[in-house]
Image 1 (tube, rainbow, N blue to C red):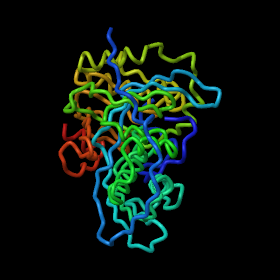
Image 2 (image 1 turned 90 degrees about the horizontal axis):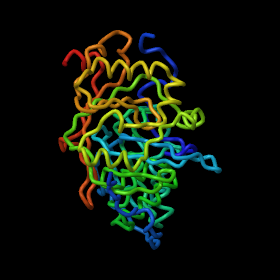
Image 3 (image 1 turned 180 degrees about the horizontal axis):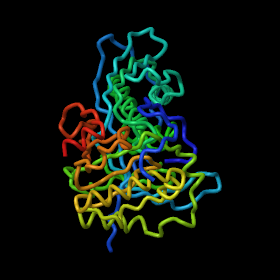
Image 4 (image 1 turned 45 degrees about the horizontal axis):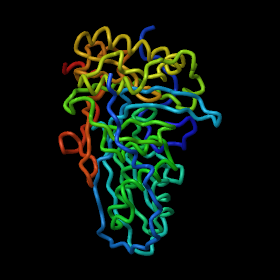
Amino acid sequence: MMLHTSPASHCTRFHATHRPFAASSCCPTPSHSARRTGRRSKAVVVLASANDSLALFSPSKVNLFLRVVRRREDGYHDLASLFHVIDLGDDMQFTQLPAGATSDKLVCSDPTIPHDDSNLVIKALNLFRRKTGVQAFFEVTLEKRVPHGAGLGGGSGNAATTLYAANELTGRPATNPQLLEWSGDIGSDISVFFSNGAAYCTGRGEVVDDVPPPLPLATPLLLVKPPVGLSTPMIFKSLDLGRRSTADPLQLLAGMTNAGKISPELCVNDLEQPAFDNLPELLQLKQRLIKEGGSAFDAVFMTGSGSTIVCVGDDTAPQFLSEEQYQQLFVSPARLIVRQPGAWYEHSSKAAAPAAVPAAAAAAAS
């Protein structure tokens, strides 16, 4: 996650306008980073057949903790964060176009999504061609479920999935470490999806180290997002370095890994301060989830730069979410997922991820 990021390609589920929605030890050693091993592959040209296609699940992520280590002289921030890929995601279909095609085609379930070079999917395809020399073009169909401005990395997941698909459809001209390295050219959260699913990320987010999943993959999560997103540049600009946590990120990692569970003390996110300063209703939502979730939730915290609140330990929506002022919230269960070597991510059910249910319906079913 960088301060200065390329515009993300998302389909917007919610309007990004402000609307009130509520009443007023031994540290585990991460494996070596694959990013350091990438080399540019030799230029190749692959001629497409009209039937080359691939359907993939495009996941999102949560930050189980996020420490801002320092503000750099170049305006970026050095971070230390434990990322985990989750099974809230989108469906993507890739078809390699016949030889002679000169442009990509993107079709999305949200008609407002841009289809030009500002889109992370198109950026990923342009990057793949530039790095590999493979002159292949693709038609991409994107069914969106992950909300925009959520801190869930939905657009980054789309870009990572696109890089993986283009590589598969053209005979794997690049290695996984190369895809990981190249992905940082277009977005700071994309690289984490080329990990095994659990990753300790440092630097600006470009150093990605695989770690064992710190929690059982079956741990239930509940994601709750208000109908307003938060701008990552705005959040970093509002960050008060004097109000950060002083927790050692490696100790946070060790605490989760050794215990196999989490607690509020471990789920530190230094970006909560600027997010809550800019959107006080988000703090109120977090506090009410803690209060009314009772002992069901092991921890409640914001992921990324917001505005999604993650509840760990139960995926049952508290009854208060059925109240009128919460009708527009995005509410969804989720699970942690990993991927097998040489494969891409699958939903935890090994089927298409279910669409998120409205808050009222989720609460009524509890």
